Length: 119
Image 1 (cartoon, rainbow, N blue to C red):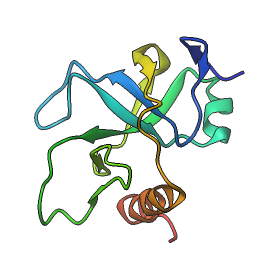
Image 2 (tube, rainbow, N blue to C red; image 1 turned 30 degrees about the vertical axis):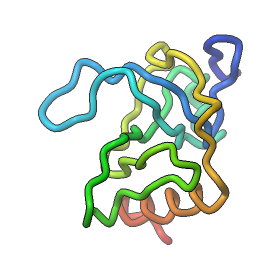
Image 3 (cartoon, helix red, strand yellow; image 1 turned 180 degrees about the vertical axis):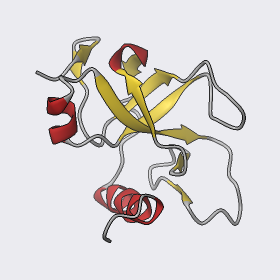
Image 4 (cartoon, rainbow, N blue to C red; image 1 turned 60 degrees about the vertical axis):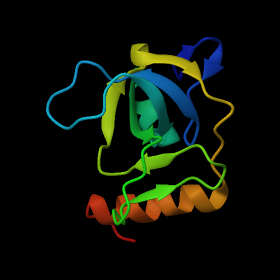
């Protein structure tokens, strides 16, 4: 069973506000939106207790080719900071931030490069 927070299931490709504190060095912190990149398999495997995410930011970093703007204006995806966190860090869904299928394909493409996965 997938862990539920605020009566909404945590699903691949969804965006949630998560608690990223306490951090070290250049890690993203604070409560911020994050894209769920765990697969349904991973969520099932961990019973929904552990979820891999990518934080989102409103700060553009020109020239950083591994970050890209969401088509719906929800900010930029920070693909270099994959983080697996406890589902208890999930605060609430962010239904106002929806990724297009093109956005999700770009996330998969960049993650494949970042994690040495076949493209």
